[in-house]
Every structure is written in structure tokens, then in C-alpha cells.
Length: 514
Image 1 (cartoon, helix red, strand yellow):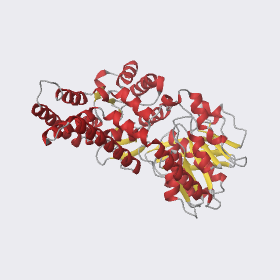
Image 2 (spheres, rainbow, N blue to C red):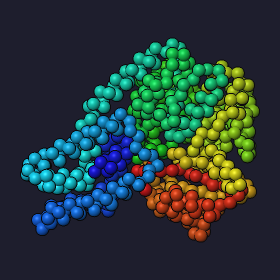
Image 3 (cartoon, rainbow, N blue to C red):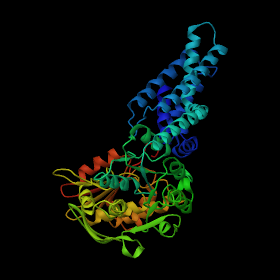
């Protein structure tokens, strides 16, 4: 029971402790009716039937416990449970609720014999195992007022710290995709001249920003680069109300997280909450390569638009761009003139994310030579179109983080541009695309068919859509390989790929997807 509670808590954590998201996962994962859970319910019911003795019921329960316990103890997850203070509170409440239920049953249905009490405890624990989803949702609901009170205290403390840093300039970065890479690039450039703090990893929620401020902000910090993520309207504004940015960057507005946003218009409105929150003397940098950025007017602050292509109406745009094994050489046109840059980054999407970082550095008065030096030293962000050369073997193009329709297209273009060996792709497809889930994954399959020599499709979640796209793109069935897990994919890859070949890892999926 306790091992299952821990697994359920891990899934609740991966769903951001939101009961509605956890319920949605339950409805799509089939976890409530899995074979192992049905066996647990069977053991529970069998122990209660009239013709089964308590001894026989205990034998069945113990047999089930041995099988299920071994399975849970040996299970490995991509993102294991992190025992945060909140996770510990939820687990404690789950245990207290369970103990109360077991105690009440033992009191009302037991007798003085230890054997009878032991039997009732075993039966109740088995029943609670089968109903663990109900237990965890009850625990989260009971703790909701407590969590709200605790979070309010954290929020007020972060606001106090921010108000105490004299002259702090806050740069907000948001977008459907590209914001994390842009954050890293901007941080590397600005560090040449300023004392900079950025939100680490994917700390892009209100609580992630609060944690960054409370744990990392220093009195001498000059610039705070704040990544702002969102899955619902109002999420960006909530962060802006705390940190009060004066510079805002919108990297993209695309059909990401349509499951929660419902429409591209809602995505646009939410991303531009950052720009709408800027003070009158603030400045915005927005990416005109995306139609739902280009068609959104900005009249509350000074606004600079950028793009990869000159024809998209950007003040900042790339005049020329050449990829090589050493990275990318490109010429950037700016209102102040044209400048040549070299970077270790590859891929059009990475250069697109680099442009606003350069533009903000110029706006803040940095010397162009310092900017060029920093750009040449920028390291590829892990899992975002980063190259990993395996000595004597193939080269991995790692784009495993949070794939999206535009990013996957650009990643496949990078793979297609590579010369010298065979080209492989390993992908489970894209998620959180709402009603367009099938359509975009089919398009991904069609793009793969024209870009690679061998395709390895992982899992069942997007299997049918990608397969339909591969076949529509006239890819030979013998070059298509479907596997259950990434472990199976890597095993197959070692048999097929060799020296000089290229392997694109396009997206990874958390444990909540099969």
C-alpha cells in the first residue's frame, strides 16, 4: 500500500499537484483498471467472501503483496519522486487517513484476537491499495488551505527580497518554446558585464520563480532573467505581478499546450501578458517569425521585432547563415548596423533564440566585441538541439526536451543537412496539442519520411499518427521500426548505426505517457 502511495504521489507531482490534471492522466492512462490494480481488488474481495476462511484470504493477500511489492520496488522511472516538503505533507496525510480507516475497521469489526485484527489490517490495506487514487486526491484536497497559506508566505517573502535589491532590472522571457534556450544565451552574454541571476532549469512557474528569489537573489544582483511558463490564461501575469519586469521577450506563440489553452488566441493572450505588464518606460522584443506574434500590436511600450528572415518585418534579422561541424556563422542586421557572429550552436531555431539575447545586450549598452566573444563561447543547452559525438561511433543530435511542431521541423532540417552517413531519428512524437494531436504528429511522420534513412518510433501514445504520416510520406516499411521503450530503441540503434552516422533524439515523454 505504501509503495503504491509513493508511486501515485510521483504521478501527482508530475501533474503539478493539480487534481484536474491528475484526473485527466487517470482517464487516459488506464491506471485505474490496470491488471495489477484489478488483481489487488480481486484479492480484497476474495478475502471477504463467505466461503473463504481468514487463513485462505491471508494467503491470497500475502501472495499478491509479494508479487506487487517486488514489482514496485524494482520499477525505474525517468523522473522519480522528489521528496519536497509538499510531497512529504501529502504522503503523511495519506498515511494518517489510511491509519484512521484501518483503525476504525479494526475497532468495529474486530474482536480481542490478534489474528482477527491482523486479518482486518491486511484486508483494509489491500483495499486502500486498490483505491489509492481516491486516497491521494483526498489528501491533496485536505491540504489545499494549508498549501495556500504556505505559498502566500513564500510569495510575500520573495516580494520583500525583490523590493530590497536596489537598481534591480528584471528581464522576463516567455514563449510557447525557445524561452529556456534564450534565457541561457542571454545570461551568458550579460555575465560579461553585469552580475546576473537567472531562474535555473525549468523553474518557470510562480513557485519556481519564488524559490529562485528566496534562495539565490543577492543584494548586489544587477539583472534578474526570469523565465515565465504558462499552461493557463493568467499564469504569466501572476509572475509579472511579483517580479515587475522592465524588459520583455516573447520568443514564440505556437500551438503548444493546446490541451489546456484550448485555442491559439488564448496562447497569444497569455504570452503577451508579459508585454502588457511592462511599465511605460519598458521595452519589448518579440519574434515576428510567428504569425500570432507578428499580428499582435504593441502600443504600451517601445517594441523591437526580430526574425530569421528579412521579409518578416523584423528590425533584427539574419542576412546570411552557414552551418558547419564547428557551429554556425551568421550576419545579423540591427538598427545599429550589421555584425558577424560565430557560435557553437547549430540549427535555425537556436539562432532565432540567440537574436533577442544579442538585441537586449545591445539595448543595455554592451560593447559589441564583448557580445561577439560571449556568443562564440555559448554552450549548447542540454537536450535542446545539442551535439554529442561518440568517439568512433555515431553523432547524437539531442533535441529531447519538449518537442513542438516548429522545433521538430527545424531539428529534422538540421539532421537532413548533415553529410557523410546514415540518418536516424528516435521519437515518441509530440504531446499537449489538444485536438490537433493526431494532425501534427502525422505531419511529423511525413517530415521524418523525407529527412531520414531509418525511423524508430517509441511507445503507443502517438504511434498511429506518426505511422500514418510515415506511410503517407512514402517511407518504406522496412525502414520503420516501432519499439515499446527508449531502452529498446537504443538497443536497436546499436545494431543499426555506425561510425559517421547521425541520430536525432526528438522529444522524450515523462512517466505519465505510455
